[in-house]
Image 1 (cartoon, rainbow, N blue to C red):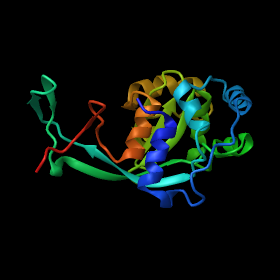
Image 2 (cartoon, one colour):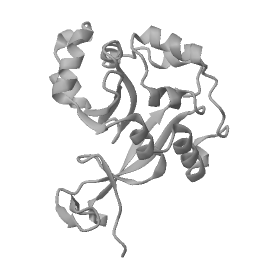
Image 3 (cartoon, rainbow, N blue to C red):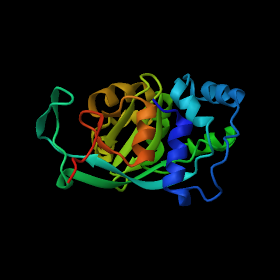
Image 4 (cartoon, rainbow, N blue to C red):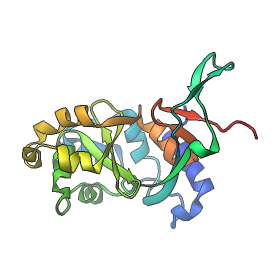
Length: 216
């Protein structure tokens, strides 16, 4: 498996315009990471720590490709059933992420402060161990990194604003039960998330695997 550095280098080679100042080393030290962990109240999984200390990552607006196929075909190579990949089954969606990897400790924390309504509820997600790391489809879906399970989750914004208990605005203990019921895994770990947003490969989020279009 590639490292966070390798994935970010791949993105820089593909889309250098996303890094206006070039690909520069992250200034975050091990002490900075420990301070952030103390502030959040959760240890950062290894892959996320590696990402934070890799390069300075600005706020990035790019696109990712999802395979939406619900049809499965037999693969002789894998000796199992795999999603059928056709051009009409590939959806390209706008994806916004990043913005924390190259900041100082205080700048990082300012990005994690609660926003204006209705986003003040996001403060409770952080207290419960969920870092908001991105959104896609015009903020239709929020993407969270779960510091407890080390998985990357996605949830439609309407699930939060319409299904979350009203007390969750002030009570972070309600967040994890809510997310366990309503959120779904987008990626099993942070390196898989970086592969998704950096490489341009096609991803089947239902099976959480990368797929390829067959030769024409």
